Length: 276
Image (cartoon, rainbow, N blue to C red; front, top):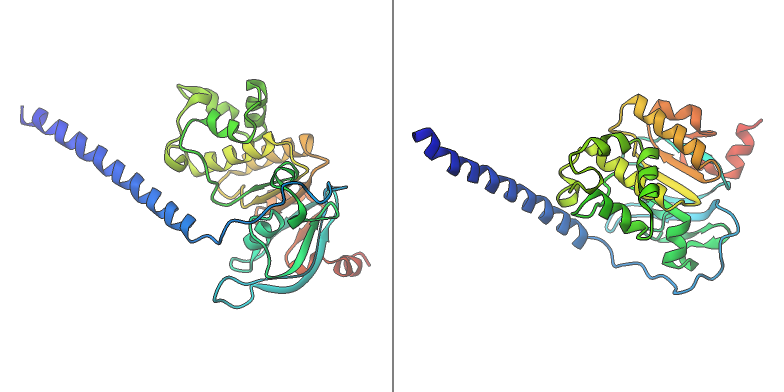
């Protein structure tokens, strides 16, 4: 009898703890968003449309506010359709570099072009259809899997949604869920695992059919078999896209043309020396 009397309060306590944890996560995310720099400005219409899907940068320099230069004066390029892996130690600016190429942020020095057009000259729509960036910590909508997918392509058919999930190695797991593609993933995707969050973000990127893909440690939480499965799909369906994969996973090596351990190795001069 006493046990039964305790069951409801204990259940309510568990529910309350869960709500508090979700609120704490939301507060941390909100604080992170508030600390971001002012939103970037985009032209309403692009200066020109990219003529190819390669990047080039000159005199690139970036420093976080109040800190020393993370890197400075770097020149380089990633050729159209190239498959490049960037593998460098923590704290060397890999993520910052990826965000610069995706124009999540702007450099303090230098400039970047994509397809021969300055990134700052591309409209938001042109940028989104050209470059898909999957960050280490994907930002997902508090809602269902299908709502998150439709966020990037509202007009996508269910066939296209499932296709993107399959390419990201997630279709089988989603299909096994009681509510399938309509499963609610919770606040910031907290109801699914880290690997599933990464793959859902990857499916969202695939759904856009971009001309270039930037994946920042997307494969880190996945097992070797799943990494290879996704890379085979990328090789099959995005062979013409330019890839920049920030990763330490050795399974990636057979799928890329260059394994780079230094920003300067992406310069034409370094490539020329390496080819001798």
